[in-house]
Length: 330
Image (cartoon, rainbow, N blue to C red; front, side, top):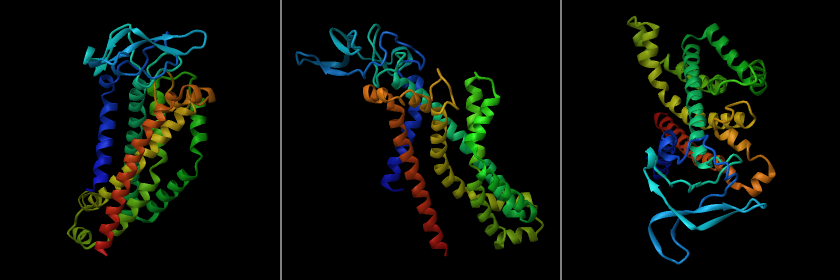
């Protein structure tokens, strides 16, 4: 394992752990509102006061909104030390102090906390959609490659049909048939099923090719000659050969499906407010004034960058390793 791969794996592990434990790392709940602080800028955490004195514990000043401009200034008359492990969270400050590491949105909700909670939705949707796609692709590719004939033709033509379908318009049609307000769980399930069903064709084709090669190998022919059943041959000899393809496809599909969920939620077809996802959070920043005046609203987009790069590095390393093994075998 190269140094670059180790770094990518470490970054991915850290991001997934922080998102999974959002309730611990986030200083506030995702729907907690601070109506006195709409579009508040990120809070500056300090170690030195204006007199230059060093404080052993980091602290923040109180924020005062200047009217009517809407700008914020620090209230140096009050100091709020940052407390660690208050109420089962990693950090926070005592009331009425506030700690907004990435600022707030128009409702005064902490953007940093919402990014962590929203990452649960976006990452989990990518993982579940990948599981659906790889399960369907493995079944279809194995059956098509092992049995061939009419089953191969039906499954592969069905795959071509899935590639030709306009899935965005199909999702729009399905959403139009549902009630105007649906539960977040229903919206999440709809997005995951549609994205996962859309992505099974590519892994199915790759697994079909490997199965076509494996079924003519000497040990498979020997097993069939000794009377082994098709189920036994597939489970014992065919499927183990496809694990490398499945793992490589997982590292490719997960970031693609995360982006797909972000895009659909950005367009209003995924998770709706107040439940956060990176897509509907970015939708709040699509106005020009929000980007110019409140750039911290783009935090979900910045959170996507290391996540997608980490999966890209892993996918490249797995593809390179597979190509190296193929060259050695040849």
